[in-house]
Length: 316
Image 1 (cartoon, rainbow, N blue to C red):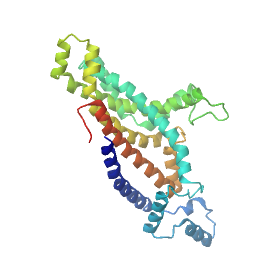
Image 2: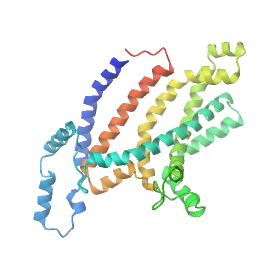
Image 3: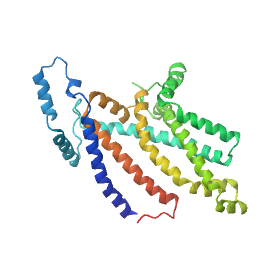
């Protein structure tokens, strides 16, 4: 397995390099100039040109890319155009909150999807199955921004059960319960969409294996239905579930951009919006690099989990 991991890493390096090339030139195609975003409109043209020269914006695009790549090879991502702080420091401060929000939403969504999907398969074509399938379609179809704003209005503005946004109460003592109260609404919005999509995957995977011969043999031996369903059937249904969960993680990080903006969650999603509006190219390149690393790592972990779920799969 170690050799397989090394091969995957070696394959990922040119893929990652290609992603950085595409991202850099796509970002450079955006209209406007970063200098125009944080300098007074009345600033003399000479000052603007000097600022562009300092930031390297007058260099050819290919030269700008290789300068960025050279900094990357030295473990640096450059400096923000707007705050002049190191990009690694800025992203490092924001990635923790996003990973916390995304992981909590994924766990919450799967804690709903797996048991509900199993029960829907076991109770196929019953009222429970029809109701859960209908609710899953609603959870998948409802726009996240609409659900988020609706929850804020009802539970934060009207009922005042939860804060309207942020990660901690300003001027408060902080702590676990304060953080939890700020997480509930955004985690629910992200998690309910995940649950809506994954209920149908779990149900379909379970239905595929429930009519297999080995399950009929297990039932004929008098094993308890709970053991047959959750030990024998579920394990064999895990491979497609692992696949869709692995695919969900990059999508979850992308979806968190909108949710973080709505709930003012200080993560990389909110940072992405701010960087786009200010045309802060170094931060955008750093964020794209982090996103690519997360996707490649997720794909590798998904492959490794196949071997854990099914001992017949071997990596050499």
